[in-house]
Image (cartoon, rainbow, N blue to C red; front, side, top):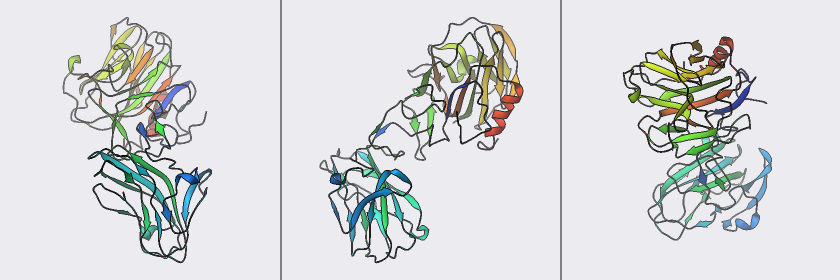
Length: 377
């Protein structure tokens, strides 16, 4: 198995791993449907509405993809395709554009041609020779259509323009390109390739990241380990707001637990206590996260008898209470139940890792050090 973004992460025994920062292989973007037919220009007949000098060619970045190319002409316009719209509904529109470094025109823009609100978005010609993603969002003004438009406003005699990955979504946020539909089981991908992650109504930000809203959002997998056998689990988490300053479990927030909830594995925290659960016991560790909204590494190790706590690269034992929960078949991230609950996690969970063995203190520290720079810890 290759984990190209961070070769320092321990891979021996790794049976599940998602990473929100790995946008090529793990975090693919919010579930969405691209309403624009053939946004990757695979079929010439689907792009008849254009004027000037255009051709569909192989994408210079990927021999298996295609792009639309404009060459010198008095005026080149790519109108795209009509899409039936819902009046007063917000749509996001985007396309990738490349302008050659020798291009001698003065402006390249994209905007919805018919109806809607907002202004054109221009390619930054001071950075010619690079791919730029131009994004627009606004409300449709008619029920007839909206249309993507790339319009080279000036004539040009030298150079060329490429258009790639056209996307229209019924959403205020433009998500990473998909030529079709990205389902809720295709949004978050397990880097080990062994498990399917189901995203349930996650909160998506304009920068493309996701978070948990502390109410009714979650992600889930079938348990990749055996709850009564040896395992390790780690996450990087960040609360969106200060945790309640108490040790009372009724005011907890829960980053990970079995559906039910069945606490095996599973842990919750307040600003003062972190509790981990396993097949034989639960243990409490005192923390001080009062007024903190910083990133932390958390998790647990079950060695078959004893449950250990992981906090910021250290293995801690904590105060023991005997416990005998059932076994877990499904694990939730960011929630205790699929339905709304005040105890659900409110914030980010950037990484989740499961191992089918007990990691050593050195390995826990290694994983912590591999990512602490990313999270400013």
